[in-house]
Image (spheres, rainbow, N blue to C red):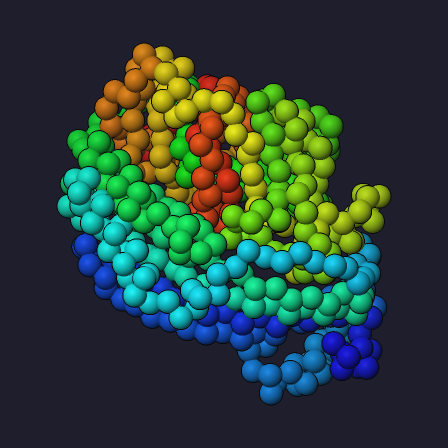
Length: 430
């Protein structure tokens, strides 16, 4: 950081991150691959005369050369007139909940995979596949604004897909901050039961239906809601929540937070990329949008303060949380006369980010609901909807939140089951 200032930089943020990661893949009921790797990266965010560049360096020997290149390139970059500087410090930071013993853990992780496979088979699955990741990280941060800090974090995450026959599968995931919190047997059992219950699905019907969404599929929706609450996304035209502060964007049953302090979340950290302490931010209260997520620059434009959500590009959520309601999964299902219960989805794509028009394809176990009870599996349907419509049509929120974080949900999300009315269902195949 000192070297960059000497070379003419106005603002500098430097981070050093070391990450020990292990991956265990399994397929056809057996472990097929296990590998580990360690990364050491230096992140550089540099501003000169409102010209911004960011990069990463893996080899410390290349640091001086990289700084020289960045300084030279800033003269060729356009100015960002909206740039408002970085946060001033110093600040005090809390400690993260962490289990660094996971860095050298091998046999216990194998046991977790075996437990998931065995449980899925016991529930009726003939084939089980998936992946387990473990990670132990240490991060050091220093800024020209006077912020200095460090923290450690740990996570273990498992994804289990169970299959019994063609068109019959169940999928379940879990993320935790340490192996003692992971429940691989329960995850495998749930995936196996979903696969067994969804044998011989029929083609689903099109139309408007009430839908009970599992935490896995509704976390996908909440991930998009959290991203749209970024002031940077709003300014870039990538949000369906522009000019909506103080207005209804969801039903009265909906209260949503972004919580970078949640000790159970794999996305929690004590400070953001500028060194501002993270906090619990109220985004939606009883259906009303209360505010956006900010870094220093966007906060100045909106005449407010940073919310502790600075990313390297623009503000981002750390952990999106939907406040639980009163109903169990069975209670939500009992409220539906004619609808669907959906457990997973993929290929969520926006037709228009600014209006929130999107589609997504439910996958794995999908069930009809008739007169308050599950009435058989279905397949080949698509949700063609609007994000604000979905949020406004929430009829009830469940009491069973779980953390979801996998390749379809980039930001960790805590979501229970959710009942949504009048969801537009179309066919996923011709």
